[in-house]
Length: 396
Image (tube, rainbow, N blue to C red; front, side, top):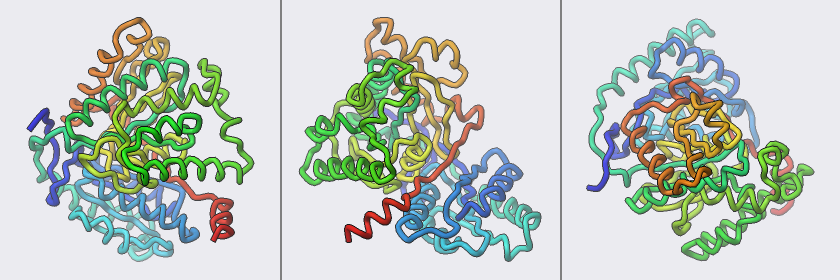
């Protein structure tokens, strides 16, 4: 066994770095009730409120369901309570069955059956507490870092992102992959301009073709909605931060995944394999949706680089914030976990990267991130847009 951390071993062998009870609404109709249940239950409960699931087209509903099931199956979840109104297309029992396939203890709550909001809150707190009584029996045990799945994200990028924070996180990814773990980055629209560089790193033709196809699809989907991604990037915020071209932004973005070969690419919220090296996920560029996709895929810890500053967190996985901008570090150090701006001052990238890696292991061991300390827990699911669905039907 190489470098280790202390995690929560699940009955099927998975390892979590947190021991939450997730309160998962099947639709927007009960998202506020799920949040209130978590608030009243205790600090160990985490709600995942969202805007989907009341009635959606088949492909969109399947993506919502896959995401919610993946959240319930994340190793950081020691128990899950699925909440429904009782009229949704995604039914609580079916979703609970999907979650229980990895032996996660699950209960369900139907608001219409228990007698309305107050009764649902009382019943929800009782069910969640029973799940926690079971989950808290789990004890931390030693695990190898090769069991970690490390999600990587960037947002609020500026000119320092591609030269400091992103390569520092990339260095940490390289160290984890070398140790046998999995690193994953996504945001397919931000591959544009650098997709051929990434494609050359793919270990097989299927992954290479899938990567290029996904980039084409994301660009085509944006065009259906009247958006020229190549023309719209960098964003006005990026330009204010000193980025001048989409190629500059994309080349700076992809370095956060490190330098190892691309071993595979999965769809949004699809399971990320452990011990698999560098694996891409096809997600939109919106930070919160992209982070949720990787957590639904099984990422236990996420790193989020930001040049201009960000407060984004997640209810299920700790989010390590990294900045390479000295001004952002100075102004927002209470929201930032790792200062990579030393690179701008001439210090080696590897030095900042080692700090990111050491923070990853420390967070896996239980250190709370700045976002966790402040309970910053954004959650949103990517929705397949009507124009995309119509285009797919025409193609068929």
